[in-house]
Image (cartoon, rainbow, N blue to C red; front, top):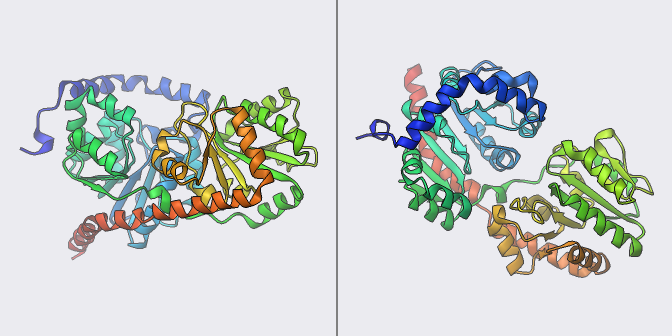
Length: 437
């Protein structure tokens, strides 16, 4: 019996029935998300599965990732697919990832917002785009999307797959549901042996460990004029970056700056929030702490008396990383799960992070184990370590070099992923030749 003809678990059948019935509520949901800044009002039709671009002729590979992190991780894979001559449709679900896609997708690849996981919207999307191969990135497993793709017999592969302990335990409460979904995947290419064990326990039939694509993402070249302008504006300043911060962390960073400024009068702290639209609120936090902020989104450069430079723009972290010898990676003092330190490491920064790093546990464990980064638990410890590293450049450089070696050891996932996908690429070529024979 094929997977598509197996009896669907009640939970999955109920989900599909409820989401189909709830389609009429979609306009209200989208309007609410627009008000919160979570949707692009000019592209709402895409969320209903309506296209905003023509479908190019020939074989098409569809790559879907949830947000910015998944998009950046899979971008080198998109480039490899394009080098084989296939058109690539990339979908994501966030405004920030869409803006980044516009800047960084290669020619022959284009972006659409993924439709909401409602059966009519998914069907409309698939009817129009007719992808020949679908790649899901990491863990964005939408039930209606998976069922609809498998029913159309489109090969469906998970790349850079991951399941945190929390997600694994949550899915274990619905074993038949997750097994019914995972059995519809042709292949699960996962990041680690732990991820493989999780997927195997939940019923995935075909699993390969390929490593984490995020280690193979190349550093993006900084815009030369912007880098030159920022370098000139910060000459003589000691720069520390708090990158990809989340609510609750910026107040801590401002407090750390206040204490360090007593000893290091030339200190400039750069706060780059994970969500750039929060820039104004972060500026207000700095002002409330008696510090002078400047916001990059308003065209400002740091002045001699600027304390906090809010880097509230998209896709520019590489610029400031090139000037900052010390980087605190955000999302780790609050219970978010941490943010990706790899770009900062590749650009030579010494890394500090909080205790909540489950999203990147593998790399942070290796960094901490080898003394290639340092864990801080509160403002006092963060102040102490930044101060020590400012004073001791040799120690800071030793830690940064050790981190660079750790990242190199984890590389190779891109080549292994492409090798695992080659049979599917070959099948696309054969199908295309038969059509034009």
